[in-house]
Length: 177
Image (cartoon, rainbow, N blue to C red; front, side, top):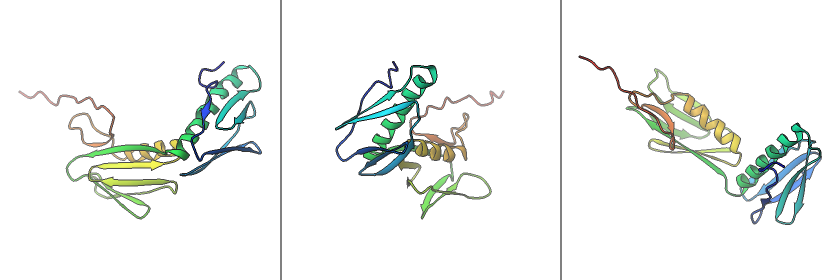
């Protein structure tokens, strides 16, 4: 039995889970999410607890068992609490600001970068800190990675965009004479 898959998912107050035509729908105070249900697993809803069960015991079913439980738990967390990733911008003249649905970045290139913010994502900028918030964990991570990819932090001076909890190992520069 999968250690992740056999764990129950407690439903917080105000979160509803339903299965319709092979789609799992999760509604909560922050919004709603959908996920296609794999035919090798099933979902049992008992009041305020959700369990993911598998149909067979073959290798593929076992792997989908843990995957679907993790995806469903992330959906429940997303619609009740939401997900947040924080990025830090370091460097002289490096700036970020939000105007409408566009994140404008000045990262030392000869041109500014205009990143169009997806619909389900909220981005706030406070000086050198960019905070990405949303209910879909995968989308929050993808948007954060896209923003970081514009100017990844370099190891000599530490300039660039990095996650707040990311550790950058600095290198020594040229030794000189």
